[in-house]
Length: 144
Length: 250
Image 1 (cartoon, chains in turn red, green):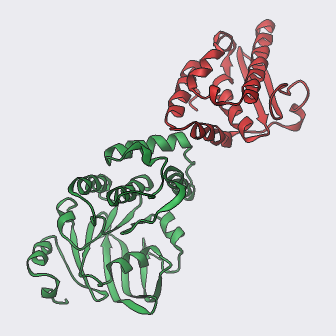
Image 2 (cartoon, helix red, strand yellow):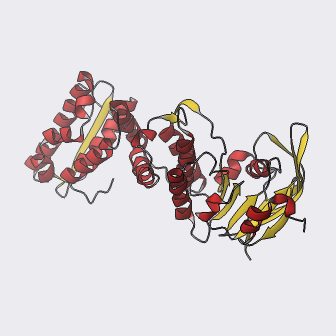
Image 3 (cartoon, rainbow over the protein chains, first blue to last red):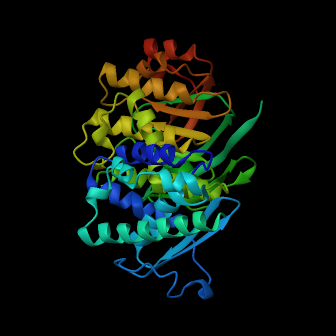
């Protein structure tokens, strides 16, 4: 993913990608495909504080602030979690905190895949977003 | 002359039948070579032998590609090295999605070349750009490989594979057979798009019709398992007028 793109442009780029696929299954398989870029966290970063509560499979998300930028990295254990984390980190990670806080998560629906997720996976997405915005607010409060 | 492939004294059989009987052929890099000859001359066997098809047993002689002998390489390795065969009768493979098949092939080649794999979206962008040029429907992406394709669709799909894999030596085994004029034009356009002065073509055909669209640099006449004559494109008219029997072995 070209990190020169801002969050809205990145979502638009993913929408273009997903629009290429003719069926819902193809779109979901593309999420699995994205998971091939998935990275893992060191064991010491996988703890209760970074655990994504409410995710359908085990997942962890680490958030840090540096010079007004929200740094995020995560790890998922299922193929879907790996793919979704890769997709979402492309959108949310390493962004200015103000950009993250002003981004409307409803825009994620424009990609045309959120509605294809099972209710449990949609719940996982909500859990991820809750953590991301939690980290972002914390950074803002700290003035980082 | 820069030679990309040299075939020397090649002898090969399929089953118990010896078909290639001391064939010699030199392919100049970046040129279009047409192989013409009567039925049973060994044209398809030659193409199968070059790509390492399991039907063929090489009995003698050698094929060198970019200075390296390839007769002991398996078919996959030859393909990864850039040798491509468009089949006369492409095989139908039910259950194997056309796009998956092609992406797997392309990414295997990219890996061999030390390049990163294309993800599904990057690949589909590439595939769709070629589909349009070949006049192919977008449902070709999700259909099973060649299953239920018309003759023309199968040949177009072979050219689609060629465009995506970007091989260096391209063997087209009767790519013109069974094509109507529109399909022939689309297929020829795809082939001409690949002509860049570096890629080498070996066009195997019975008829001169396709050579109106893909201008050859050399004509080789194959008869009874040997190349009996090599000449410029002017030979086509002579063959059309007098047939293969009038060609004397050089």
